[in-house]
Length: 112
Ligand code: HBI
Image (tube, rainbow, N blue to C red; front, side):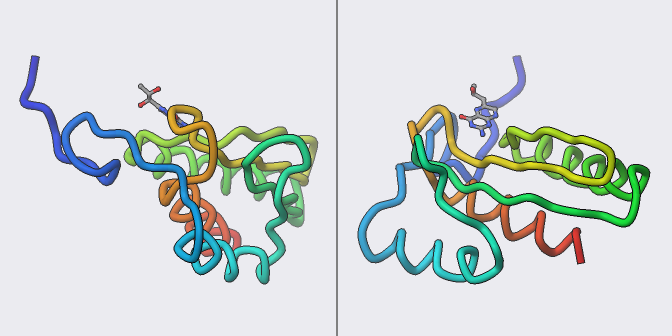
């Protein structure tokens, strides 16, 4: 087994803390302004991405998948044709963490 790698979950093998308070508000504000919304039934972010066609949508999903795997942090998503419904939450923390904010930010950047 290789050495335990540092990661952005707060150190070796650490899990990120669920966001709360002013830090949470500050982190979520730009995302909410960019079309993300709070899920109704859990501590999660949701957004629907619409692309010009299926191949473009799937290409974006592929780019996101590569970054998600590198970060070891994965979206919950549902694709129909050129639309992708996304939900982000950190399962290990039971809600939103900095990992979700980072992934949402990258998803928006990759969507252009
Ligand atoms: N993705 N969204 C999300 N939340 C997690 O808690 C999570 C993940 N991807 C991988 C992962 N956790 C694993 O590192 C742990 O379940 C071991």
